[in-house]
Image (cartoon, rainbow, N blue to C red; front, side, top):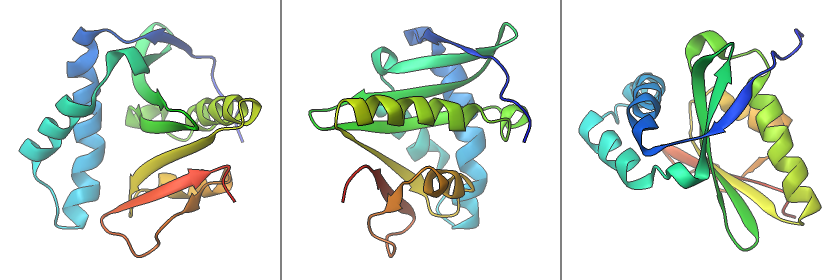
Length: 150
């Protein structure tokens, strides 16, 4: 496996929403279309409701914004609300490294990490490799996963 490139994170700003939305829509469209569940207007509205710049960091590599991660801290849990990368940067280990850092932090604080993922997303294999488990395997189209519980 190639070494993960050195990226940096910067706090997101409200004006980063358009960038975040573009990556989100591009990644969600094919997944939801394959499940015959795509409604772009609904997805954009849901993202507008859930995007929190205060919980979000933009991922930068070689001076270019390449993705974003949104993590919400709760009493006993961190929720990985979003991890989105431009296609050209998937598979380089960036997601693994970002999630690994979150899992280390959660472990030190004795918290769980939760996330939701479209059931046909290739990222499920990554999440399972990192120790997440599916809460309700029969759920569709979205699976809830948790790490550090049980």
